[in-house]
Image 1 (spheres, one colour):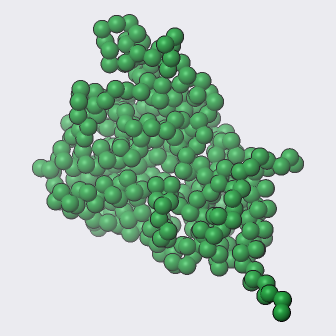
Image 2 (cartoon, rainbow, N blue to C red):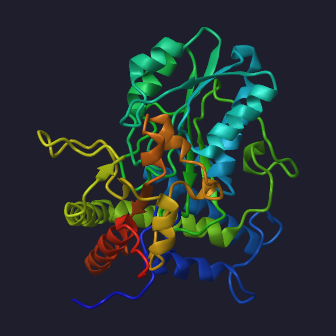
Length: 400
């Protein structure tokens, strides 16, 4: 088998490469001889045509999650979408209550936003997940109150890959008259999403986790009188008054195409990535002291889907994760979320599910994608075996 080019990229949960088909679409809306006009310029044909591109992409994203195109609000990414969902909803619905429920292992875009709301006088209940990284419906039910306005729980955890039952959790929120938001940045293309069937009121989406460009995302906002969101960015009243700013036609067209392609090859992508994950797990069997932080299917039920196949968080006992990361210079992986990579502390997500500190410090997140090859998996495994063995070996004593 041909040796793959280095470095090998196994950090798809941080970001994905833009699919060439997506890049081709984006290139149509940039230069003077293309459709570069401002989609808000309604005084000439070029502006109208650009607006049509925006609306086509809006429909492509809506179709991917079973929504109405009018329910898609463009943002600069999932981080902004999370901020708009939490702050925008809580501020707009003060009369419903000042209580928000979320979990301790949400993405920092939700965790930090919830902390900001606490400073504004809102009250937050922080749920602690089980070892599988999931919040159970009964656990949420026990936290609900008469003044709970919003529940925010992610669909797929970005460090563990664990899958929450968002339909069941949304049903609990609605029992108490609260709205339900989910960060689905890591879920698109990995699990089925249907905002109607799953009773979702607000959903954050990202393009660059799904082979689209960075710098663009969306917030699904259910068209219902009870779902009101106050704008955080003002200046022009774009996006039905929820998010002002000139829309980046090329990025939005890219996100639309990425989501359309995801729908077309959902089964193909997941079958490919599942094969890669199983190959990677088999390859790790020869390394002692390896523990999966990602909840894997049990031996009794191999078809059980407890986590998405593209994320695998692994602890290497007795090895410092940062040292392993530096030694694996030919393999691009991470110690956790890319948004938290500047910290040398253990992952708050791993600590949040009860992982011992020593193992949390010994953990790396591997994530696979559409363009990962078996040859890359095999070569990465060879490097992991060699590097882990070297780091665990006692240093040689100097000769007398």
